[in-house]
Image (cartoon, rainbow, N blue to C red; front, side, top):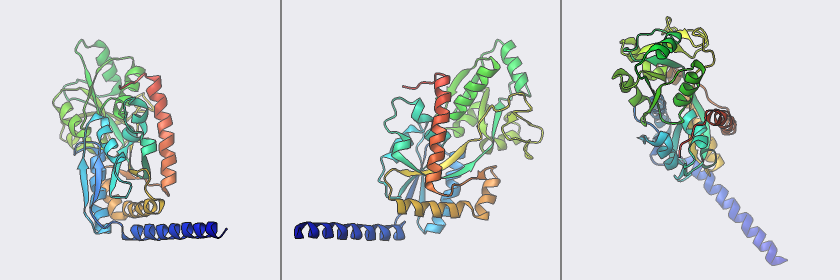
Length: 328
């Protein structure tokens, strides 16, 4: 009996010491640079979001936050790298609807499961999207595009951020609804490669976020056909909404969010969440992101965000299955 009591006492003491050590670790975080993994090349919305966060959170933490762009395999290279990192808060991942909601269903060969191997910290932003065409295409609306595609003998290509990405799935849904066909051209670097491709007429059509495309729309190098916002956007007052264009509901207002490797201690996860939310909700951050047409949307807790991501996985999984999208 005494031996059992001593063992219980020792176990309790060990747990107390471990809890104290974790509290100290959380209080000291970060004690060294933090790596922020990005699944695309520089220039796209996910990269823009990450770099905005990088600038402000490094000031709060008093430590460098290093952006690490790891494009390729529709974001899976970066996903796997983040999922296999130590769950100590020193490696974080900025993902989006493609990497963290769609890839789990689409990629049968994915070596990790985002919902199991990564933990959501909080959503960061949402952003409006546009249906755009190359300036070589003689149309000014989605309806005209459909008519042109049906009548033209010229082959048309559409670009995306990779097979199974939301720009790919949204384009598949649109083409199916419109009754037209185009050839899919995926770009592993996301918007950073998609923009030069449509300006160079490698592809003629795509679905892309407004932040990445607007500067080239303003200079006349990309032609917008419709926007996903409920009302016309003040920056593009002459561009119809998808509803006005006759294709209501076509196109996603995508999100970007912050993730950590699964197994991160809850106190540390909550600490990172609180710090990131503080930064994202600051007037300076909201103003800075609004200049690139991003709206700050955060979650009150990691648990709330994780539930949202699970719902997104289920919803997009149905789109993948219904359209028979498969990647081995």
